[in-house]
Each structure stands twice: as structure tokens, then as C-alpha cells.
View 1 (cartoon, helix red, strand yellow):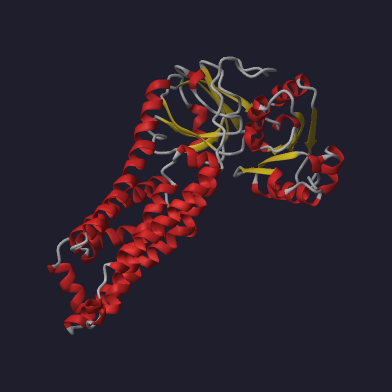
View 2 (cartoon, rainbow, N blue to C red):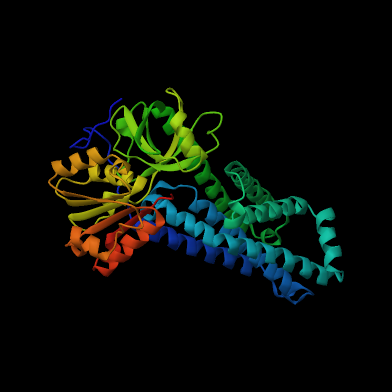
Length: 454
């Protein structure tokens, strides 16, 4: 299939959903309210007698840290449950960042819970801590399962450390994180069976069960059921693989009801190509053009084993996608003037974004590459810019000789302070452009960034 530059967006296409920023505020408010309710339920479940008993304060502190740590674990799950309204309001990158920031606190609190409960019950029984720990494991219902859950949580935390993860295969990391769902199930069973806070407190028990059931429901619906239903509807298959530039290929797929695929230019999907070697891997690739029924196109640079293997995909290969994700879209702009600045394969989402911008928007496009041949989709971008009467600038040359700095950007986009700036490329390139744009007077809220690893 040939894919040429298109001056107009495809007709009868379902547009991408606009974000609703207020949803993030609602989510944060509900999260804080839920934490407050959780703490209140635990605190009100304590009695003066239990607190005055030997080890009572330690036990109460253990319950409080245990419930708080478990609640934070649930929030971590919700953040990566891929709720469409939350993802559109915040963006998956920020949600994952929040998830990683919460993780150490959740694990620490659960670890403190184990220590305080053990010491508290040891003081109550007037025995040693190790003896009490053994009593827990050998005599108390579901404590052994809870210990397994804690071990799985620790394993998940350790494998998420950047240095540790760099030494793991993706398949190993993925399987370890699947086991975290088992850890949460075991932890829930442990709390319901042995949680003293639930004894004589049916409301506390009902609220806690409802919170866990709602979290599990969101995971089942948005991470399992919805992607399966969408992929059964669209039935994507590889049509062809096309060389675009040195080391860069486009994978063109066809499917059913593609016009119903609600996606904005600049967004990405998690792509899983169902071959024996690749089905484990789900990688984020941006569309390099708006869907054009019955086709969708993604353009990828061969950086790792998975992306390099895409060159050898055979026509007819089934494709499973999740998404779309990302806030790097036309909905983020604040003005009727934009500057699209990209480098390397980071040019590809800009090409789709350019196609999706309203005709009334004034556009300046700046692309950076080592050679003209490295400018991905150069002819398509030039045609799209020409059709809408915009400006197209190419910065070509080795990185150490031709740099993108303040003087270059000021020369190519003299009115940049009055434009929304979309930047997409490798980390170093993005940092230079974002810094230059800020120093040239572009408001922070008008700078939109998408990073690509090279």
C-alpha cells in the first residue's frame, strides 16, 4: 500500500476525545477523601483498653500503617488501570510517574506494619520477636499467605529499581509484576480474615470490601475486557512493512471499522505483534498519520531487539493494541499559532498532529536530522505544510556541528513567544528546545513535550 501526504484529514473519522482536566481534580479529591476515611475507620476501631494493654500502641500503629500501605497499593493499581478519563486528563507518563513515586511509601508502610505488629504481639505475649513471628506463621490463619504476599511485593519493588530493571529481560519484569496482583489478593484475604479492625465493625468491613472490589473491577474492565472487545472489533493485521529512512520502518495495518477508532494526532498505542518472539512485548508507538480506513500506520526506529524485529513482520500477522494514550495533541494548545519542533523518529507524532490541527491554526514546522535522508516522512510533512500555507524548516547536519539553540530557534520562529510549542525527540534535544523556548518567552503552559528514547 502506498501512503502519500494528505492535505485534508480523512473524512467520516471519529475524532479523538478531548481531555477534561477537572477529572484529575476529582480523582485527587476522592483519593484524599478515601485516605481520610481509611484512617478514620482504623482509628475509631481502637479502644482505650486495647491501647493501654502491653504492646497496644505498637499494635495500633501496625494496623494504621498496614491499612495505609494497602490503600496506597490500591491507588497505585488505579493509576495504571488505564482509566480513559483520567489518562486523557493527566497523561499516562505522569500517571506512571505518580505510581513510581507512591510505590516506596506503600512498601515501607507495609514493612513497618509487619515490624510493629510483631513487636506489639511479642510484648503482649511477653515473648521474643522471632518467637512471635514464628507463632504468626505457624498458628495464625492466612498469615503465611500474607508473608508470601509481602515477599512478592518486595520482589516487585526491587525489580522496579532502575539499575535492577536494566539487567532483567522484559518478560521477567512483566511476569514479576503480574504476580503483584496475586500479592494484593492474598493481602486482602489476610486483612478480612485476621483484621481486628473488622471485628464488631460491619461498616468498616463493608467499606473496605467495596473499595477493593471497585479497584478490581476497574482493572478487569479497562485493562482486560475493554482492550479485548476493541481488538475483536478492529481485527488489526499487518499489511506491509515499508522502509522510510535508515533504520526506520513503517508498519501498515488494516482492520475493520477503523473510522470508529477515536484517536488524536500525536497519541500512541501500546502495540503487541502476535508472533512467537514478540507477543510478550507491548511497546508504545505513536501513529505517524491519522487512521485512514481501513488502514493505520505506525513508524518505528530500530533501537532494540523488538523494534528491529518489526522489519521482518509478515503480512497477515495479528496485532493487538491498547489505547490511544497521551496528551500530546491539538487539545493541549492555548493559541491559534503553533510551532512543531522534532528530531529523528520523534518527527512521526508531529506528522500526525500536523494532520489533525484545525485549518485555522498557523503552523511552523522545524525538523532536525543528520542528513536529509534521515528526515522521516519529509515529503508528506512538506505537502501538509504547503497545503495549509505554513512554514517548513530543516536543520540538517551532525549533532556536534549543527545544534538547535536559542539563536537558531529565534531565527526560524521569531514569534515563538506567541505560539504553542510542541517538542518531540530524544531527551537531550528536548531539553535544549524546551529551555530555549522558555528563555524566548514561551509560557510554561504553552510548551508540550513528548520524549523519544534513542
